[in-house]
Each structure stands twice: as structure tokens, then as C-alpha cells.
Image (cartoon, rainbow, N blue to C red):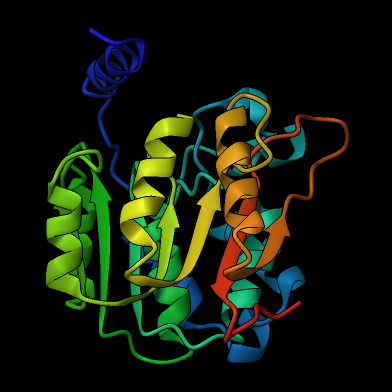
Length: 252
């Protein structure tokens, strides 16, 4: 068994011991109640993300002032200082279809879908994970344009899904955080996606994601925006990269 294959199987075995936790879907009303102007403001979005609730895994990455907001609501596993600017950038782009690889508890997927729908109806939004995510099955009753697919992104199931979906405006990649796996995902996704977003491009614990992001930037096919602001001297952790094909640049 090659080292790469062995690492992949070990990683998948570890993932299967995890379980998605329920999220409080009633908090989507907080997004629906905001104006477009508020949803276009990174400052307002930062405050909103705290109200929506953050995840409480990997607490060593979370600054102490954010701890009271963790383990509740949508359990969004993002830095508000980064995710707010990412969402604000998306408000200036036309996104009518969305795909997210790696949804964990489903909160960031739900928040993104609800946000995008405030700027125009989505044709579809699909969340993907290797593990079951019961909250996304529940969310579909609130938003029939959203669905969940349980599959291994390293298997033929991903290209089969993309063949069914056709072109996708935006794909957010936050699945298995290994360089080789991430690169394979992008190779499959790139022909179908107008915009690609990668999570953890600045995370010191996952340097391989940064390598793949730099390769994407160096390809010359995209205009790229990096959201890597940190909280003090903690980290660096997380980080979002948004790559838009050259015919459409991200908003500053």
C-alpha cells in the first residue's frame, strides 16, 4: 500500500467515527430579516455571524472573546472576520448555483445558501460530505432548492454528481485537508465551476491547502481574493481563498 493511499484510508477511518450534531435552523430567520445593505457590510456580517452561532470544535483556534458564541446555533466553523468579507464579496457576484464539499454540521452551508438567496434565487445548492448530516435533510424542508449528497469526493461519485449538475457558479471546498486530495478535487471541479473557494489556505496546521491555492493562483486562469485576517497573534488559522475566472473579478 502506498503511503498516500494508506494516509487516505486512515483519514477516512477517523472521519467515520465523527457524527454531525444538530443545528438550530430557526436562526436562518436572522439572515432573512436583514436588509441587503446590512448583508453587504462586512462589519454588520461579523456581528450577524456571532448571532448565528459558531462551532465548538478546534477551540484552540478560536479567540477567547468568541467562546461565548461557540457550541450553539448554526455551529458555523469559520472565523467571522474572514467569512464576513467572503460573503460580502459574493454579494457583488451573480451566484445562481452553489456546491459545498465538506459541510460538517451544515451550518456554514445553510448560512451561505440563505445569504446568496437574499441577492437572487438559487437554481440549486448542494452540500456534500462523507458523513450523514441530518440537519441538512431537515433544512431541505425549509428550502427545497437545497439538498445533501453523501459521497466520497475522492471516488467516481463526485464527477458523476457534477455531470448531473452541469455548470456550477460557486464551489466551496472544505473537505479532507490533505494536499493531494484537495488537488484532485480541484482537477475534477475546475471544468464545471465559474468560481472556486478554498478554506484553510492560511491554516498552519494544513500547509498542503496553501500549496494547492498557490498553484491555482499561478495558473493565470483566475483573479483571486484572499481573506486571511487573524485575531491577534493566534494562529494563523483558517483563511478563505476565492478564485473567479478571469471574465469576472471578485469585489474588493
